[in-house]
Image (cartoon, rainbow, N blue to C red; front, side, top):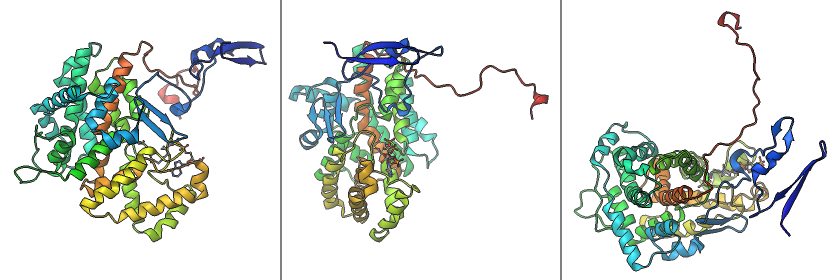
Length: 426
Ligand code: ACO
């Protein structure tokens, strides 16, 4: 028997059987109910309970704290893979074999340089510009250099621009960082892998060759893997939404960067560090917790729209913290973070609301230990998330169900009224 939802409106006697498929009903079927001349709709600010697409990229079970890319558990990928392998997986649905991986790595290496003229765009930003604004504007500017990105329905052109964007993002991020430090740009080094090269472009000084500690390179790979995709989050939704009006990849990624910048999304790790600094010492944690409970402030890095359990990424990052601190020395704010977490996991306020540490709670501590200023933290999220945005963009473009994003509203303003001339306005 077909699974249906029976809906009745006793006031009018109207009734309908709505088909249930994939644990959803089709929202447009509600329109058959006429409510005083308006078709029935749902009201769902923030898409709390609305599926906007089919996707086979990332699976999350927020209740159980499960995250999988293309079916592979995140902890196995973090343990065994490199970021570029994971990017390939997100884009192609399968892990690469050795030949495919070598070709993919070589393609990315080929496209790492950014156009020379883009450096003049970078030069135009104030010296203290937030690197996320530089990243956002420069990513959008890529479209002027690669106008073939408008041929996004052509699989070859699309694949080329995806490779370009994933390859160039670390270069752009490193240049934005060095601009803020008034240091000369360091061009990509073809002899280094994705993460090692990124570290070199960021931190190379006068030495002939920069060589990063392998534990730091691995920590970077792990952080990048954990941040690569997270299904229909705010920035991915921005990417898909901007793609829906027929935009190129660069414009869409730029919109994603803008969405990610907000402190309730990718900007949270920057906010976590600020919060830890303000608290300062372990003995001040109880006072801070009281402030959270009375609604004066939020505990940044805690809570998640989807996870009502420990964010699996936070567990893995917590392990990486120890590895990084072995190389860099311990950040004293770690003790403050651990104390906050202890309260968060035991105090009734957090337990009742099912608020757990999210991916941003510990990542800021690692970034700071690596020598990044807080304004770079979200940039370090945007670089790896680019592969997720690309995979989601590609999935959207090739989805026969795709439509221009255009939500409804409930209008609460005036209806038609007479124009008031200037002299009659109070
Ligand atoms: N600290 C204190 N209270 C919180 C927190 C928090 N971090 N997060 C949620 N709450 C409380 C809310 O006040 C609300 O309480 P109430 O029911 O008494 O009004 C309840 O928990 C539900 O919170 P909502 O804001 O409705 O949950 P929503 O799903 O809309 O928000 C969000 C999720 C934005 C992540 C929220 O938990 C938050 O602001 N967290 C801090 C910012 C943060 O860490 N963001 C990073 C998210 S991960 C990422 O984007 C990569």
